[in-house]
Image (cartoon, rainbow, N blue to C red; front, side):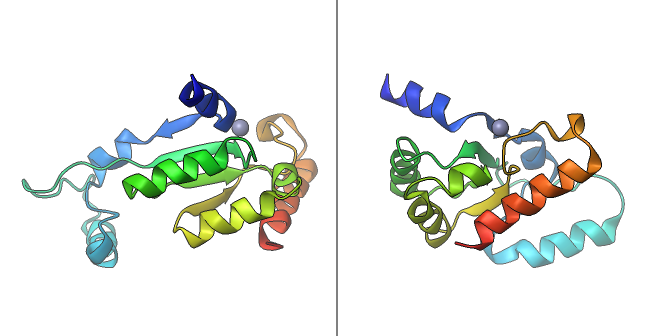
Length: 144
Ligand SMILES: [Zn+2]
């Protein structure tokens, strides 16, 4: 029940299976630069990896941070040694003590992305509003 609430609170989880299938070693710690170079040099389509390499996935969590759910999520990720990407909403970043949660995300090795300031649907607003939403989201994150 708690897990279900946590998952709903955090928002959508995108499992980028395609990334794992196309570039299974793209994010291997020791080989990232070499593999990126190899992929960009080949210019021959998908990188298929070798037989001993396992497919990988990337996890992203949108709409945070949430003082109620995100610390519990961070605990679970830390226990399992999993690094993810959090796409944060600027106004949530600035709420209460959520800046401490954002610092924790960063300190524990997760990537942080911008999910606009007010969680607007970027394709349904003017270019100027879209720019402002992205700029304000960046500012909220950069301030921390
Ligand atoms: Zn969202």
